[in-house]
Amino acid sequence: MPVLEKARALIARPSVTPEDAGCLDLIASWLIPLGFHIERMDAGGVSNLWARHGTTGRVICFAGHTDVVPTGPLEQWTSPPFDPTVRDGYLYGRGAADMKSSIAACVVAMERLINRRGLANAASAEFSLALLLTSDEEGDAVDGTVRVVEALRARNEAIDYCIVGEPTCVSRLGDTMKNGRRGSLSASLTIKGVQGHVAYPQLAKNPVHLAAPALGELAATTWDTGNEHFPPTSFQISNAHAGTGAGNVVPGSFEIMFNFRFSTASTVEGLQSRVHALLDRHQLDYEIRWTLGAKPFLTQRGDLCAALTDAVATEVGIAVEPSTTGGTSDGRFIADICTQLVEFGPINASIHKIDECIAVADLEPLARIYEHTFDRLMTN
Ligand SMILES: [Zn+2]
Image (cartoon, rainbow, N blue to C red; front, side, top):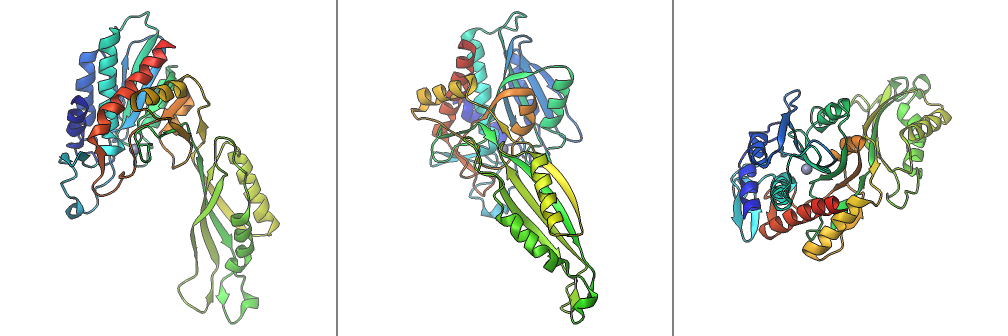
């Protein structure tokens, strides 16, 4: 079982973010004999790889990450996290589901496709295959995928179709793909008051009292009602802090952090100006610092969604559901240079947990789904 062997070889490398632990070199050693041209685009201590088979035609890309999240307490693992172990039909190890098995499945899928179609690196080819891999997805994501995307954009190299191999399925392999992700917009808000003695409030100005009605209104606001692809935009306060720790002091300032997970039904500027208008209406003296974590993206129905839907139906016999829920992913960066992008990979129930695992029986079907999807795109 080639997918299992490759997945084991990757899991055995302890690549906790931003370490790559030799994963990309190993993957390159699998790709070079297939005719891939390998470019390392390492930046700021992060290992990045861009591999391309063919120089012309539309680019069909697989994107992913070799890094994994920390293991947590080793003694709680049934078998060591970097000693890949098959037990009761499951392959256990950190990265088994997120997302070393997806990378293994993709390499096997591309190998089979190249051999079966006799794909050569001809200058007249209608399609190229590519892989975009990084060791910094789970961390800051500052020097990872975004750096490769910048380099590709600088030389006008576009990606036509991209599958990101993140674990998207919920209870059965094939049940869910992500065809979009919400954006993430954060703010640090400081409400200013005047510090004083609680017994002499006329000499102080309590920023908590001043801010409370505005915060209530922010929390109760309907920012949008979503659209056919996205749930409504959500607003959440994540941190609130005021006070010196003493019980007899009116605090001088009140610091609040909040976050929007927003859909394509809202814009960054629209949300920002509504927040400013609300705070102004409450006549608050404030400072606000905004951070745009990710813009939302959406892949409308097209060749790629159709190819993946067909692949899942053929290989595992179920209808794949499009979804835009969950956190952000590196898809947000690639969407800048790629019009059709979906995320599809194994069941995500165990990711980031102790005893992370994937069903061994899902490994070969995952490779066949990827191969079928690439093949179908080439046939269109
Ligand atoms: Zn992941």
